[in-house]
Length: 253
Image (cartoon, helix red, strand yellow):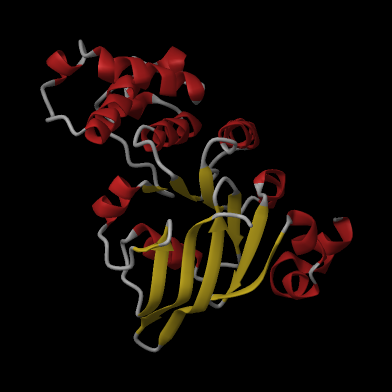
């Protein structure tokens, strides 16, 4: 049987009279890239925020490696290996790309936060940071200030800082948001390379990227999962066609 890494059981999130997550049961297998799609207002970001520990569910449980983490904080979940990469880039713009990654490596190692002058000579920080920049295609930008990087490069750097925590599961919230076609293609190629080594939950509006990357896809509508399957299964599902993709997309598929 496939080993499950993350599971939700009867997850419910209410905001007053609004039911944002509706009795949601979701299973994420170890080693897969699992995309979550749905129209605006479907509850995707609310779900990710609950998985990351930023929003407490109203009802239900979240299990990670079989352990109930429903009440764990975001930092506690990060230490367990569950990491979110945000839709809006969150980097230290006045530090170099290398320094941003080194800070994440340092936090993972549990070191005290020394002045950068001292930390910059620490091979245990610099060498893995350089390797991560190489992995995401930014080794040539190591000494560029994060605030001076192009938007697509900032997203690559943000991914490197997430990988620096040595995650077991990465929650990616619209990594292609705001990107042009060329930058999106770079990100798709990058994710296709790293997905073999990481379990990834992906929220993304770019359907070409989703269908190119996802091992499985879950479709949310009004907080409820109406279908889960492979890209081919989702494309041909009549409920999904009606609720999200549209008949034109179904014909084109």
